[in-house]
Structures are given as structure tokens and as C-alpha cells.
Amino acid sequence: MGLAPRHAARLSILAGIGAVSVAMAGCQPASDGPTLQEAPPATYDGVETRLLDEDLVNFRAQMTGVATRADLDAYARCAAAQYTLIRGYSFARHVRTTITEEGGVWAADAVYTISPDLPRGLQTLEAEVVTADCAEQGIPTV
Image 1 (cartoon, rainbow, N blue to C red):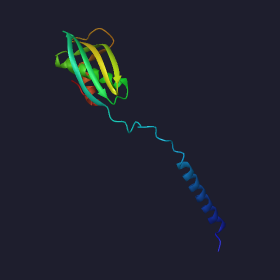
Image 2: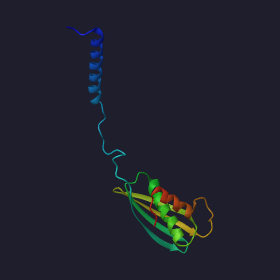
Image 3: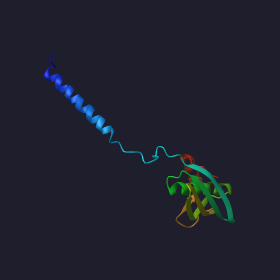
Image 4: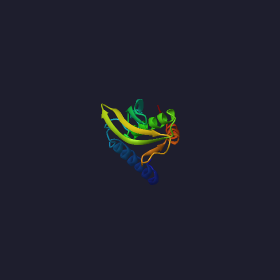
């Protein structure tokens, strides 16, 4: 007893789909290492603060698992904002930041001036606003 032509055509199509699926399974790209989902999360390894002058402060921040240089820069900025509040000031101005990486450990050497009044310059920050933003983003402060 043979299959009706309609059923034979369905079986042929299903067999073809199965063959294509098996062939496509062999075409998956090989993994070249960890993906973004597998990468370890960034860790905040601490900040060392040094008062260079009455209103000039050096922050040395360290992280591992950094996705971008901006991550480390944000960590140093958050430390500067919190330190500004601790000293009883309201504003800070970015002077410079140097970022290095060695063996997966990233370090920022940042310098800020702190002041009670809005300083001149383009790279100023209002400490309370920045500190609140850091807390919202989960970036630790001093």
C-alpha cells in the first residue's frame, strides 16, 4: 500500500528540512574565547587619595575587568566627587588623568582641584550630583 502523493510530498519536505538542519549545525562559528557574556565583571580594587595642596588632590584608582577606559575614569571621578563632599566643598575641576594597564589591572592617576565655589574651566563637576549619579550606576566612591 503506497502513500498518497500528498503525504509523500510532506515526508519529502520534512526530510529535506531535517537534512538542512543537520548541515547547518556544522556551520556554527567556533568560539575564540570568552564572549561579553562570559567576561568576568569589573571589580573596583580601591582608591588611594593624596592631598597635594590645600585644594589639589591626587586619586589613584585601580580596577580589573575593565570594559573601557571610561569605566576607570568614571571610578576616579566618583572618588573625587565624594572626597570633595568629605572635605566640605561642593565642586571639583578635573586637571588630568593618566590611565595605564598591566596584566589586566588598570590604574588611573587623576588630579582634581576642589573648591566651595564653581571653579573656572570646562571640566568641572558638582560633587553632590556626581556622587548621586555614581550611586545610581553602582560605582563606589571613597
